Length: 194
Image 1 (cartoon, rainbow, N blue to C red):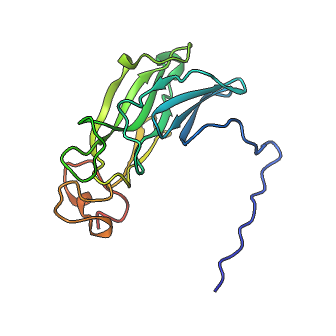
Image 2 (cartoon, one colour):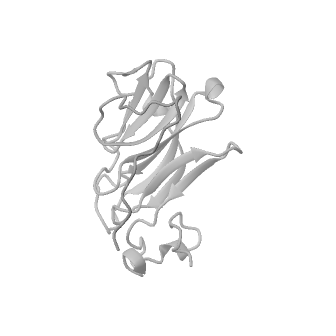
């Protein structure tokens, strides 16, 4: 049986489908306003696209503390619903906790969600980082998830993966990974908790 042929989506008349900028390894984006967008890159930079152009200077460069191998990296961005008054943005990234990006060792990196302050200058002071969620296992380098979004209830929601292999090393990788069943550990994906 042949798969159905892909068809192009028809956009409503008020939409325009065209590239807005060229940027290597983008992973997520979030709108600050109708003319200002934040874009994350796998390698650890946060860029600002404003008034129709990509600003030449990165808003933040976390490349020295981000593991970007396999499916790791700077993976998610969200803008606080009260941004105009508090200037908060949130990033999900794979933190090089032990200074290396190893797989399936005690030195494997972890995923974290941090809050930063984005000033009108579009350059973030790294010292404004407040770590909100930390030590989400990333043992094997894959299945990191990383999407972060605010819900209609103004709560921040975080998608967490299972890390590819069991962080504790007691069940295995892929379908054998039972880490999502471990209580009090921030890991899992739909179907693993069965």
